[in-house]
Image (cartoon, rainbow, N blue to C red; front, side):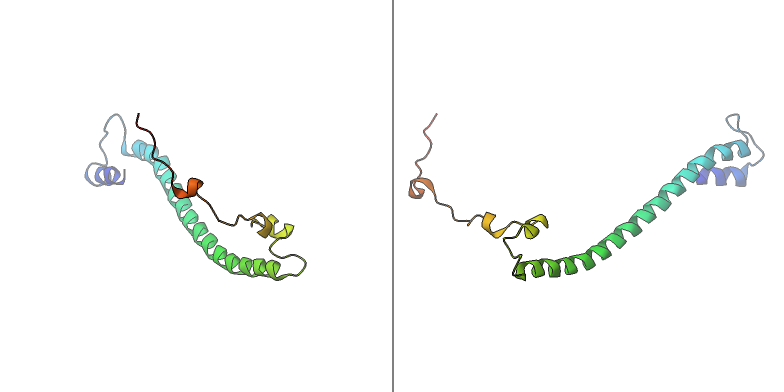
Length: 114
């Protein structure tokens, strides 16, 4: 758009092309340019907002870990409390041990051929 407008303004401002004068064509181009500028501004605002979020998340995470550690260390709450679970963690009594045992002592026969 800019290239077309610049060429027309510079080389043939008094001519009419496609039934349009330079002024009429500029009136058509202006909303396109305005929309593009708005999108560019919004993208810049989004980048700024993402950077602000990331910075504030770092501050939150360090303080959140202190709070969770405090809940774990509290004698009336601890790792098996409802408060700990409500904060999004798994209570100690609800955790699985992680121990697994294989069937047949680990000697499973191979599948039969089809």
